[in-house]
Length: 319
Ligand SMILES: Cc1cc2nc3c(=O)[nH]c(=O)nc-3n(C[C@H](O)[C@H](O)[C@H](O)COP(=O)(O)OP(=O)(O)OC[C@H]3O[C@@H](n4cnc5c(N)ncnc54)[C@H](O)[C@@H]3O)c2cc1C
Image 1 (tube, rainbow, N blue to C red):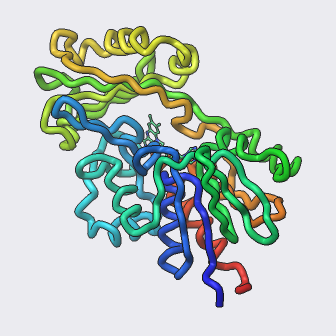
Image 2 (spheres, protein in one colour):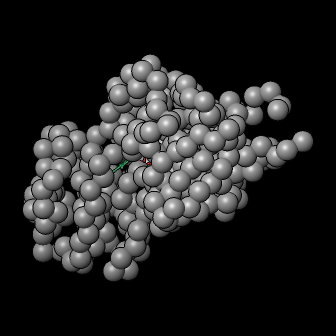
């Protein structure tokens, strides 16, 4: 029997999870990502001797599926309880930074980075995935796990979405998020355990990466609120940085700020989502779209969406 093949667009947690379960079941899987590395919004970076999580900060584990998956991959070693919210559910961070989980999954897969997908074509029974550099990948099935507005841009010409798929996808909305990372000459004044939710003002979240135990050097990550990020989305990063650092001066003394970097996330949290964990597109080729904008959202939702997409393909009758 011919080995079933799938190309997954997006090496964030949802795409990698789907790839993991398909590969475990004997499928031939290729994961394409436009980035230099894997993980998408589960992003960590280092500079000036400090380490930062600058995308997702922590995650919940409410489902047994997610718990089993992480324990199976890392034997619990990767997980750190980080109780920065008191709503009854523990929150977890990852040793060395949030990017560690996607990296660990990617080790088991054929992942091609630096591959920005620019279009899709239907050829007989296969789907051809075309990259900006002109490379072509053919597969029986395609999974789209990139943010939905970016996925919509891939459909043109011969392969157009149906009206009902358009309607289902056009309701999905993401919040933007400006992020400032700063190294400090002294520890911050953020109280233990090192994560602070701010209800008002331009900053929504402030994290001490040293208390979080991912950075040896004192360093903080600042996330602007969705409203502030939306209003200032096209502003100059320097101006945004100044406002955000000014807003946290009680906990991050201005005189202690040493080096900074700024990142603009156009898509951070999926604020309006599709209720199901994925959508099967009404196309002449087999294509599913998923990610954190489908189902419960966030890191755990991205995992559950990826797993559900893999299960849907695995349940298809043999060809
Ligand atoms: C600032 C910020 C803070 C957050 N905080 C939290 C938190 O504390 N807790 C929590 O649970 N969640 C948090 N989240 C949300 C969480 O990070 C996401 O829900 C989750 O990581 C999404 O995973 P995904 O696989 O659906 O998408 P992504 O991680 O976005 O993966 C999509 C991938 O597609 C790739 N891609 C895009 N276009 C193309 C293309 N044309 N060709 C090829 N590849 C492409 C991208 O490079 C990316 O790697 C936060 C997100 C941000 C940005």
